[in-house]
Amino acid sequence: MTEARGSAGPNGETHARHAPGTPCWVSLMVHGLAATQEFYGSLFGWEFQPGPQQLGPYARALLDGYEVAGIGQLPPDRHLPIAWTPYLASDDVDLTAETVRLCGGTIGVGPLDAAEAGRLAIGSDPAGAVFGIWQAAEHLGTAITGVPGTPAWNELLTFESASVAKFYETVFGYEEEPVVSADFDYVTLHIEGRPVAGIHGVGTALPRDRGPHWITYFEVADTDDAVGRLTDLGGHVLKPPRDSAHGRVATVADPEGARFSLIGSPR
Image 1 (cartoon, one colour):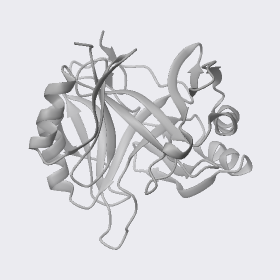
Image 2 (tube, rainbow, N blue to C red; image 1 turned 90 degrees about the vertical axis):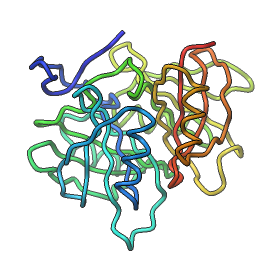
Image 3 (cartoon, rainbow, N blue to C red; image 1 turned 180 degrees about the horizontal axis):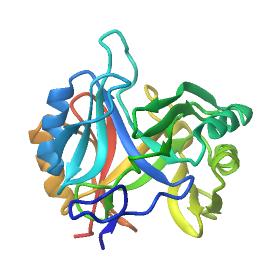
Image 4 (cartoon, rainbow, N blue to C red; image 1 turned 90 degrees about the horizontal axis):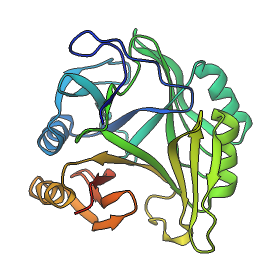
């Protein structure tokens, strides 16, 4: 089922604004912009067009003419972790950024305008996981979901879910649905009764070199085939394909080390 959102689609359709708190965009900042575009273009079938340049060279990825994600270039002297960053929708990014600070998080970038596209800030939660905040103007965010090559889910990997979930609930107004299990620490975040993201407490299983972080799941037609393509393109498999309740999942990284997951229908 294709769910189209965003500004205008290829045929001039108008799509709805994302509800506050909904993950509405994913963005990646890398050192090799051209090589990264080639990698994801080959993996997901994306094409690229230039986007707002406020943070340096930046391109929007398109799938069948719909915007799905963004990739930008880091300045040569910036040695930040290479990671996909989800942007959470806000009707007032300045107010949301102030609430982040009041609730124990930090704001590292902004709030600032991205030309006529919208207004953004980049922050981190009290455990250190980085996320973006997006107040839409002309650019409403990811314009299509539910088909291969699009973001399917965003999940926070952190030490434990309870205190961090409280932070996101206070800042963005989520309702929580914890998984009641002695050995599985998971909270699903809902907006208007709809699941939009998850928080997975994994304790000491967090990567030592990464700490708490958000990870984006991208939908693929066949997880095993996509993993094969990814390795041929220079990517790395961190957790090989495995069946889950929601589909066949693999955790992978691109050639610069950005982690993400692939999810496809069970075999």
